[in-house]
Amino acid sequence: MQPRIHDKIGYNLIHTFTCNKLSDRAEGQLHYQLWQHSEDQSFGIALSKNESTGGFSAELIKVDDIIQLLGKLYQEGKPFHATALKSLFIGKSVNNSSFLGAVLVDQNVIHTHPQTARLLEVNEDYELWSIGLESHLKTEQEDIDSSHADKTTGLKSTKKRQHKTAANTAEKVESTSMDEDGEDAIDQE
Image (cartoon, rainbow, N blue to C red; front, side, top):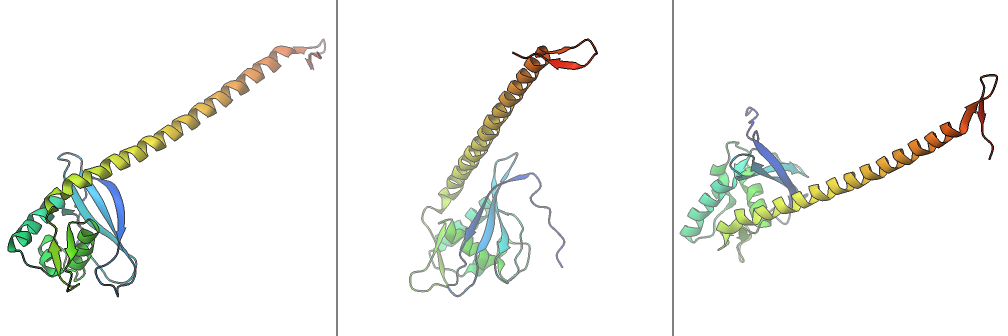
């Protein structure tokens, strides 16, 4: 068994996606994640879940490495099998390359061949993929900002309630006096 690879250290999870598998007969969907390195801001993709059976390696694949390999495949100008993506993985699961192929189809970096669904082709604008990934940063930041605004609004409402409660308590204390026996007596207005 392959030792656990701690390849996501220094990376932040940006977004989790779901996509269909390459085969129409395959059951369930795949889940995959977009990660960004906190220092050099580079992106990585990792498979994270298969809704049906079939193992895979959850290791991080750098987007730059994917683009470099796609560049070679694009230069060849021929359709290719998903196994051409195998070299990107350390793990040896037989599903790795086809699952990554499904991810890249979902990301519109490659597409299935029109006549043969088992073959793939690189899209002309594959090099722009990493720029498109930056849009997920904005979306995630907007979600964080929105969530923070909701929490801040809730906090302000809580503080207002606490202030009103304290003011009401102070009024009650002022209207309370001690009678001659040391008992609390409330002024009757």
